[in-house]
Length: 253
Image 1 (cartoon, rainbow, N blue to C red):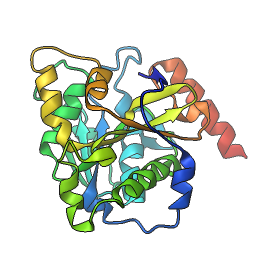
Image 2 (image 1 turned 90 degrees about the vertical axis):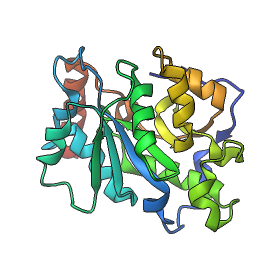
Image 3 (image 1 turned 180 degrees about the vertical axis):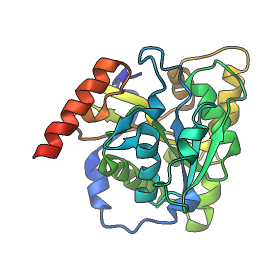
Image 4 (image 1 turned 60 degrees about the vertical axis):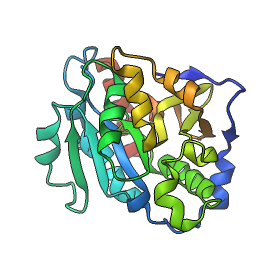
């Protein structure tokens, strides 16, 4: 899922992240959770994508382990069929707290997962990722978090935990979405968890496009620099084969 870039939303260049690149990670465990969308039907793949393997680890495990590297301790996995895949993996450190959350409103697509997980979270923000991009570089996510943290500098440190709950709280109250090339990625970004009720109202009776919520709420974008294959969703067996080929060539270097 993606959208061509339009000129109505504020852009934040990756250069902003470089200015704060040496900043110490500031209480990320209190500010951010990781929200993994793993509840899709995987119909084009023909099997559960969360359980596919890359470099000896499941897609789900690859994504969860990014939380530890980013200083995030709370992980919420949207998807009722992924519990066994999570908890049988002994490589995931015990310092990561994982919850598998079922949708409150079923058959509502990714918004159903966003809504249910956000309703459970204690942190004011969440880093949203789909499970089917295990090759996404941690550095890209680090840059995204640094840009978001830089926006929070305008807020008094005592207000950090509460700031995300104020819709009128300026840029820090808006989602920050990754942009690559001509695409804005609605499911790769940082969301304020206070959007849960707004999402719930929208999907209570029927599913809705993610951008319907984003356009109504407002969002910012952060341009990232990655190779195309590193940000491609792995939806089909062909995509999976191509990913394995890329990784094999990369490991041979």
